[in-house]
Structure formats: structure tokens, C-alpha cells
Length: 164
Image 1 (cartoon, one colour):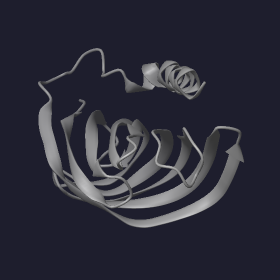
Image 2 (cartoon, helix red, strand yellow):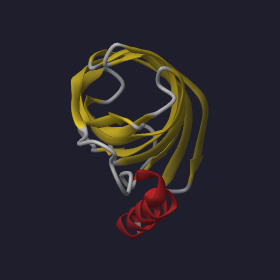
Image 3 (cartoon, one colour):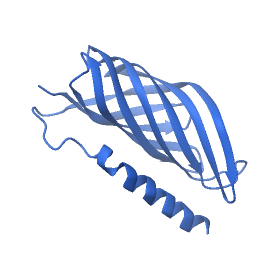
């Protein structure tokens, strides 16, 4: 039952976010690479709901990024832990948030969606897609993949561009 449920939940999250995760259909100029490191500075659970063989978790997290992205983002996460909370298990997550800082020396904010998974050993990987920005980041487009130790630290890489 757990594998079937996990597959169904994973498919649902994928289907619900596929449009947001698609790269821009046309880049005005070739995208440039973006890469660096991140640390999770703050993590606060706001809700933990066991439901049968799964646990639903809501939390707020603050990530600090450096290198191409220099700043921090705050995001509200919805996580499905595919097991009892006290058991190691795979997780899938969806988050929405706002980054504030600099990207390639341009200052401002941008909103994003972030979708991914965490394996039973605690390795997390997900894609963050930029939706809309303000200030010098108003025309920023792109995505980054973040990977590392869940709730601790890791690295990111992806592609960005400033649209005309």
C-alpha cells in the first residue's frame, strides 16, 4: 500500500506543478549558468498530522544562498512523509516563497515555487523555478536545482537570464 500511495502522491505533485517547472519557451539571449552553496538557517514546523501510513508536515524554512545568488529565501513547505513520523521514509515536498538579495549583482526580490523529494537517508533534491520579481530582478527568469542534506546544507546549479 505504501508504494502505491507514494507513487500516486508523487504523480499528483508532479502533475500539479509541471507547468510551473517548465523552462521558459524562448530565451531572448542564451541563459547563463548559476551555481553556489546554501545553508538552511531556520526551520520551524507549523503542523504535523499523522494520517494512517503517511504524515503530513507543514513548515517554514529560511535558506541562505551564496555565489550567483547572494541572499536568503523564506518558504512555506508542504511535505508528505511516506511513513510514520518516527520512521525513516521517502518524502515529497512543495514550497512557495520569496528570495531577497542579489542575483549576478542585481538587487531585488523574486517569488518562486520549489518542488522535490527527500530519500529515507536524508538526501534532498528539488527544482526552484522563478515566477516573478521586483527591483532589478523584475525580469529575471530561470531555475536552479538544489541538492544536499535535508534541512542542513548543500549546493545549487541551474540557468538564469534577464529578459529584455
